Length: 103
Image (cartoon, one colour):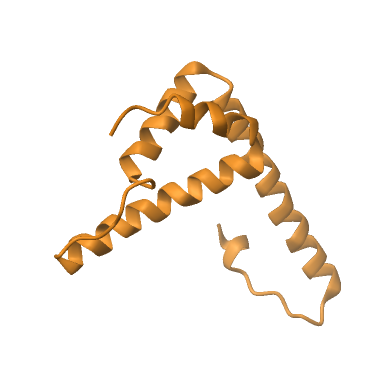
């Protein structure tokens, strides 16, 4: 993962282009991986459970600030996962939300 944190000089267009291509390739692979998971009933069940556990449809509020911070962190993970689903394969989002287990 050194490539991800490697700083590239802004005056080297070749390196910038290469780094951009690597990022784009990783994003494309990530989207394909997510589509493959969502293409199976088991994968959809897993993702649906993760979204429910993250509580992205629930409030993060708690009178305990530490608990509220924890809740918001979990909710943020759920929101990021949902955003990745929307980018990769938006057609699966409706099914995931329709079949969502009651909370």
